[in-house]
Length: 307
Image (cartoon, rainbow, N blue to C red; front, side):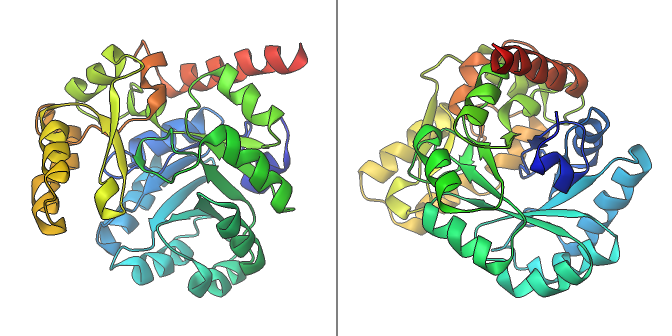
């Protein structure tokens, strides 16, 4: 499937794996890239040299294009931005901020820059800054979210910019893939389904919570702080929402979630950990390889688009 996105990325399929903190490391990124998509290493808040090591390990596992997702609020973002150039990474996706300060050095190095946006205004700003494409991410997605749904956001962003748009949020199979293209997107970003991939380092307890999830099993914490996060319901989210309702301050809420994503991903703590997952979790019923996931999405999507 050739679109402007596959041309920009140098991939076989217009599918990007989400740059999920603690989840998107070199094993998963390489597996997605080897399967024809674009794997991403999630820099999150990791020290710069840890990101460099992840990049080098990914190169050992694939000769296909892969990228790095940089959370711009990361205090190490300046160093990570340089390492991306030094290590010859060809694609960067960004979140939690404006990447304009890094744009010149990335452009000079031939890096393709694809910011994640949650509004038309941000998409237009990113186009003016020189972005090669944007990921329009709806509030159905897991992790940190905006306030507009994918169905509403994607066509409005497509109409507002001339650069290609990648749809994200609530996309987990070929039906979502085809729907994204009907809305005007030229690629999709998939997160939650790759969390349960065989190559994902995520603890099996976490994977099984997604596999067992129903349509109503996600919730949003942090609305009172202005930093909403979508995850699966558990003891931690119930306590968080109770504290929010009682008017707890930001620091008390932060203390509750400190280190909770690592607890879930690495330790398999599904009681007090943060199980970030999108609303699409209820659709995911199996643990599969990245190759199987991508072939399923593309195969079903192609049939629907041809119809």
